[in-house]
Length: 369
Image (cartoon, rainbow, N blue to C red):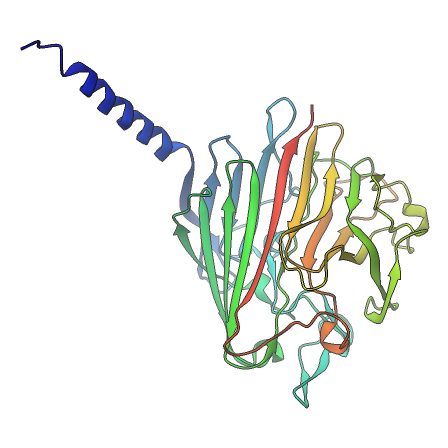
C-alpha cells in the first residue's frame, strides 16, 4: 500500500475546510450594548460587516442606522451619513433622529385628521396644527427588539416593534418588522413589514442624512431623480392634492444636476423638501430606481431603489458653506405621498386586518474611478 495515497483526499478535505472557514468569516454581525434610553432601557448595537469591509451599525433605539461606512475611489472607508456625535448614556434621542425608522405614518397629515371608514380619526399634532413623522414620539424614539438573521444575502438584523392601539391616536395594534441587510456588493437593504388588527394608515421610511463626501458641503454633489412630477404643497408643506410637472422648475433632476446649482430659486430656507413621484407603470410594485447621487471628489455614488411610489428629497440649507460642525446632507425618504389619507386619488396608505404591508428600499453604493 502506498502511504502517500490518502494525501489527495486529505488535501481535498483541508481545502473544503478552509473554504468553509473563509465563507464563515467573509461577513459578520457583532452584537454589543449601546447606552440606555431616556427611560433607562438598554439599547443594543448590531454592527454588520461584509466581505469587502463595508460597515453598517444598527441600534435598537429608533431602529436607527447609527453608522454606515463605504469606500472611496482609493479604498478608504468613511461614514456616508451626516456626521453625528454619539450620545451620552441615557440620552440618545438626538442621535436617533438622523437615520431612524419613521412611522406609523412618515411625513405629514394635514390638521392631524382624516376619515377612515366613515369615522374621523384625530392623531397627534406636533408640527403646529399638523402631524409629522408619526407624532411626538413616533417609531424613531422607541426601543425596538433586535435579532440577528441568518441570510445568504449578507449580514442582517431584524428589528421588531409593536405599536399599541391608540398610540399617537392611530387605531389598531400594529406589529412592525424592519430588516437591515448589508449585501456583498455594498448595498444596504431595508425591508419593512407590518400587520394590524384594525384598519390603520401605514407609511414607513428611513430618515438617513447622507453625505457621500463624509464631511463638508454637498453643493457639488450630482443628483438624478427619476420623476417627471411632484406633489404641490401649501405654506405648511401640506399637499394641496395637485400634481405638477418638474420641467422648468428647480425640481427638475431628470438629467444630472448639481444639488447647489439652483438654491437661489428655492423658497427662503434654500433647501429641498419635496415629494417626487417615481416613474413606474400603473400597479407596478417592483424595485425601481428612484434616484442617484454622485460625489465627484470621493468617487462615491449611491443609487436609491424602492418599491414605494414616491421619494422625498430633503436637504440641508444650500445657500452657505457648513460651519461649526454643521455638515451638508440630503435625505431620500422613500414613501407614499404625504397626506395620502386626505386625498382619495393618491395611492392609499390604509392597511387592513388580514393584509401585510411590505416595502423594500435599497441604497446601492459604488465607486467611480
